[in-house]
Length: 144
Picture (cartoon, rainbow, N blue to C red):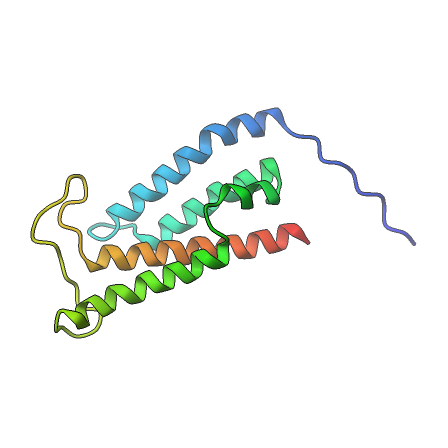
């Protein structure tokens, strides 16, 4: 028995309009959660999941190929960059003469961030890894 012919998906005006407004809000909120997380609940993991949800919403509204084009890097490259960033946060403590993954902070506070340190750098790495892994899985499933 032959499978039924594929139907073309009709674009949804409501979903496209909602995505146009929700995607920047979700990405901004994910960055807020990321930056808030090294001192309070939140951080790279939940921030990465929120950012992935934004791109998944975009993929649902505009197809996976458009969502891949909207990403600055391929999801596998995001994973590699995130791992490099997370490991470099630990290597910085070794360079400073401390044990691996010892937290180091800037002495001068930055606007908005306060005194950033290696825990924030580690959270950024986790954010990128989670974003890359989640999008790799979702895009692979959606393309099948």
